[in-house]
Image (tube, rainbow, N blue to C red; front, side):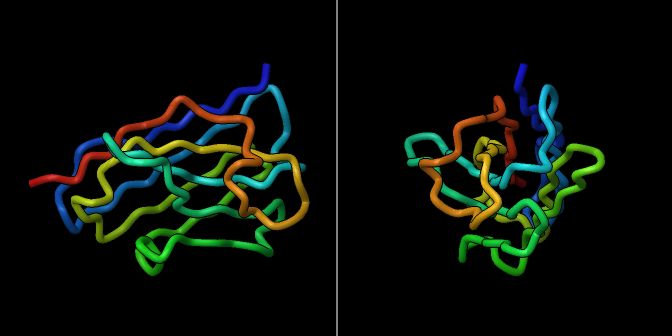
Amino acid sequence: QLQLVESGGGLVQPGGSLRLSCAASGFSLDYYALGWFRQAPGKEREGVSCISVYAENIVYADSVKGRFTISRNNAKNTLYLEMNSLKPEDTATYYCAAVRTFGLCGLQRLYDTWGQGTQVTVSS
């Protein structure tokens, strides 16, 4: 079974930090570009960041650039998102996703394996 499971979400105050993890099982991430996406109630899902197989290609949404850091540990079959200086507008359900490609990590429509999501709430 191919599965991605996110963890690390929770409630944090503005300016705080969280680290999200995405653990893969049933397949190796060695062949997959990975991405973090988020969706707030009533809004479209948006890309947050993505990373290619060997991290030669990393992309951040303008809204999180300088605050979030994406990384991966292929040996541990895990993807991470370090989130700093969190803002209320970062509140959303965060999903990790994978697409089998050695190329660029963009093109959200190509991601076809998704986690169940983890809730991040930024509030005082």
